[in-house]
Amino acid sequence: MKWKRKVWRFPHAYSLVICGLCKEGKSVEGYAVFQNLARKGCKANVAIYTALIDSFPECGNAGEAMKIFQRMKDEEFEPDEVTYGAIVNGLCKTGKLEKAMEYFQLCRENWIAVNAMFYSSLIDGLGKAGRVDEAEKLFEEMVDRGCTRDSYCYNALIDAFSKCGKIDEALMLFRRMEDEGCDQTVYTYTILINGLFKEHKNEEALKLWEEMIDKGITPTPASFRALSIGLCLSGKVARACKILDELAPMGVLPDTAFEDMISVLCKAGSH
DNA sequence: GTAGGGTTAG
Image (cartoon, rainbow, N blue to C red; front, side, top):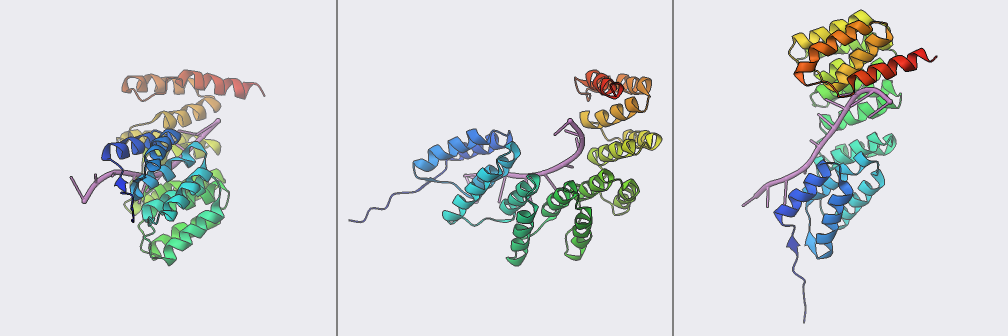
């Protein structure tokens, strides 16, 4: 007698739990829930696998993500552009750029839609590895390949430029962003404020901060951090304190704002 | 029929 075991799908509530845990960065817990059901013969799906693949590199375990990717393929699930996007992003984040480029190439050869997320991950990874020329090349080729550049791609390249001392190129991109109708975000401003202070262009940095506030873009703890550190290190501690006071009622300041400033000043004073 | 994706700094 032939006996085929019935395969159940993951109950929706469990999918929500797994995806929720993954989003919170609790990939190990999410994976445990997945394993429990999988052992009982439940079949997951592409969305659950993708959520797991996406969350492991976040907690520093890219190898685990690749294992889950393999398991997904062994179970004959077809990875789609979201799955590959998570793979490429995870590889870029962990510095495995050659592998990331291989998957990128594989997607293009197999007609899997390569979108702006692939590009922003690669541009960011290349930039952080100091391979700015390659990052720029990818950025420029996007339009030829019919992919619209979004703020993530711009921000990644602006960051790459400002970190390797090409602040003027970064500023040019910033203006080009405006011309192309791509929204400048609080990330864009934070990257540039950091970059300008690094080049001791303090007034320009402060001007950008004001431009950001005028545009109605809400500052984040990170953006204030960039501003206050820059101001403190250029001797404008009072100015930083004043801005801090103004921002306090908005509830956007990090709890450690004053501590951060003090520690920056101590560090600067100690050598 | 459902569920999945990316950026600042340290």
